[in-house]
Image 1: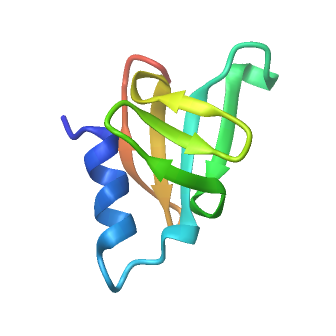
Image 2 (image 1 turned 45 degrees about the vertical axis):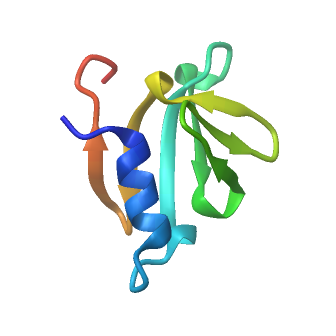
Length: 80
């Protein structure tokens, strides 16, 4: 299984891909359906253990899906 960090870095650094079109779906307790979605536009940094956004720091183990241009490119089966 791919690691969400590897997938996000590939989108971010590959010249012909537009990082703004990526969506990161993650487990967020208290949100509707315990799910939040952030776009590449909102991501400030990808660290060794977290994705940092303007409003949150999301650990990679909470990411269950990554969508790029309406195509799911990462999915962790145990969440959904």
